[in-house]
Length: 490
Ligand SMILES: Cc1cc2nc3c(=O)[nH]c(=O)nc-3n(C[C@H](O)[C@H](O)[C@H](O)COP(=O)(O)OP(=O)(O)OC[C@H]3O[C@@H](n4cnc5c(N)ncnc54)[C@H](O)[C@@H]3O)c2cc1C
Ligand code: SF4
Image 1 (cartoon, rainbow, N blue to C red):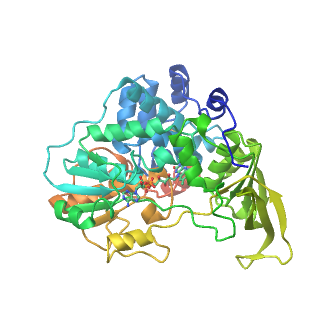
Image 2 (cartoon, helix red, strand yellow; image 1 turned 90 degrees about the vertical axis):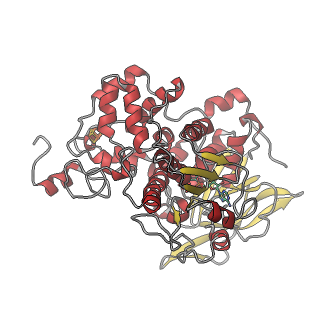
């Protein structure tokens, strides 16, 4: 049977509602008042964009919410989306000293959302006007978080930037791929408009390599930034995978972002293949969209899955089932539609997955979502930029200090260099590349247009370039050891 939409608009609005509702002004002030405004705050060091967390929280506490938003957006122009999508549990909130005091960490993400929503809802532009134009031109390929982070910083420094993207709208996965209950596409699109107001030009529906040649970009611009992200999900390579109800999980998630929710078809019994964060997003959204049963199938064990623990817990709470040590060997068909999966048991020996002989069985499913990992854009990159060095996993080789690639006029950042991390990493890398590009174009160290990755350690604990200078979240006892002083009450 073909799959179809299962719930009406009212039910879907409720089931797909924000997972972390916005703070009221009263709640925000009370939460802000809990912050200790720490000495060399570890929450700053753990934010890849180096947002001065205690500074913006203090501004909320004294009712200067616009000022708080400015502190956030100067460091991270995608502060509104990061407030919703960042895995704060393993970044700023995971580093909050409150945990050492055995208290609930400050809800930094929700406070950040409160401040950025305040200015966005009121149409207040908090970023200062860009510097006088330099007349230097840069092409940014890809309007995802990396491209946007790069374009915004270059524009603020006075350079002329044009962003090219093959999609009809900007934002990359922020607009098309993030779980709907974490962030609506409108939030991401408002950020694209904010960056447009900084003077950045956008050319959408423009696929580089098809609608515009790299040679044309190289003739018109002095530098190029690559923020092309990753490709689609890898093929499964099993019989039946071309049946209409076998989908790349990203395609299913994109349907949710581009169609009225009540028109998105979903199976009754959904299988999700893979066990990373994309699989978890897919299974959770399938259930919320009306699937009666949804099972994540993973060829390794629970301990080896790459999904964050808190995402796993969310999926289980939503009713997802997990089948570990199993692999699909064929998609079963009935009258041209998916009717199930033939599965086999696996065992992991010396790190390798082996299929156990004679262990096959079948399970009924009417939809299969594949989330077995996104492909790298290696083929595309090699054809667009002959001579661009890629590593053996297809990632763009770059200097981590500048994001410059093996081609001196080409810089890169985001998923195409990392192989797939978080939105906040992509923004930070785009921004870092922008500053290196500006230095190459003008021969001068660009003036600070905000804090973020160029912020100097306020106390010089480890002498690094961001926050406290530590590269990872720092706990209080580690700070105490580094400083040789006691910071917590005994
Ligand atoms: C399902 C899913 C859920 C996720 N959830 C989270 C989350 O909750 N929190 C989080 O922090 N991170 C999450 N991530 C990761 C995050 O979305 C990425 O790390 C981030 O979007 C990377 O940004 P990017 O700019 O490098 O790439 P992308 O966001 O992929 O943007 C790349 C852009 O390049 C464009 N492009 C590609 N090829 C061409 C071409 N030839 N010509 C023109 N344009 C082109 C694409 O259209 C796209 O707009 C998730 C990822 C996925 C897949
Ligand atoms: S670590 Fe926690 S308490 Fe300290 S400044 Fe950051 S948010 Fe506030």
